[in-house]
Length: 41
Image 1 (cartoon, one colour):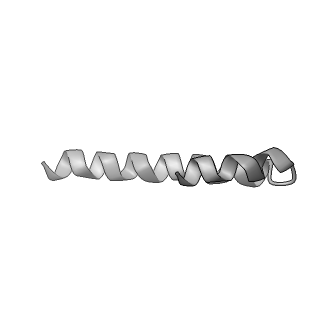
Image 2 (cartoon, one colour):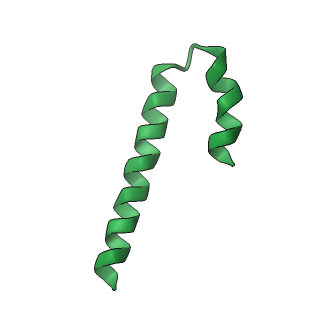
Image 3 (cartoon, helix red, strand yellow):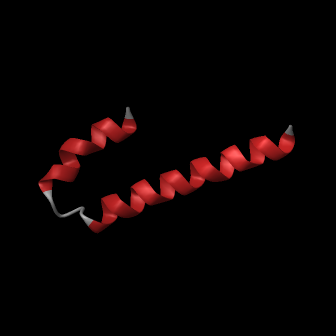
């Protein structure tokens, strides 16, 4: 049970890092400011 939880936790961290990286890469474009609330939910 703990093993599947660990996989889920690492996957969530990876997804968060990917989102943050894509945001920081295109942070100069105004589109990211409008997309940011969608990511934050």
